[in-house]
Image 1 (cartoon, one colour):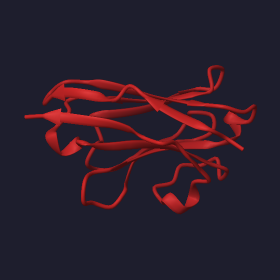
Image 2 (cartoon, rainbow, N blue to C red; image 1 turned 90 degrees about the horizontal axis):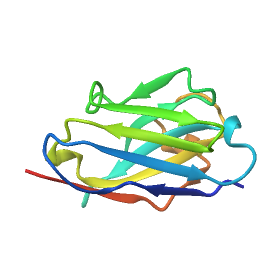
Image 3 (cartoon, helix red, strand yellow; image 1 turned 45 degrees about the horizontal axis):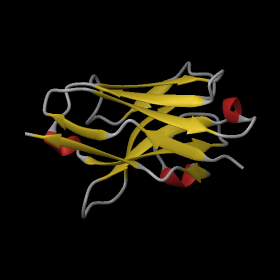
Image 4 (spheres, one colour; image 1 turned 30 degrees about the horizontal axis):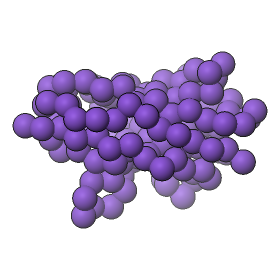
Length: 124
């Protein structure tokens, strides 16, 4: 069982930056690939970024490539999402998720555990 708690969301102006954190409980954090997803009001949840269990390989949605960076610190049981050059269309609730597959995936059905989400609002 893995529990995930996101933090770091907030209100930021367009062009600004935020760093989201996702703290995981449990001893097996390094056995999971991690991902970030988001859901805007009235829209379906969408993939943002994913990282392998060892942090070597990352994968991004085209909409965030070059602006967002996913990373992890297995010693701290934490995964991060650095978001730069934010746009109003990045406004959403952001969720982190853990996958037993250990490899990157954009498919939400490959993730076994989910956090409660943190709100990110980008004003124009």
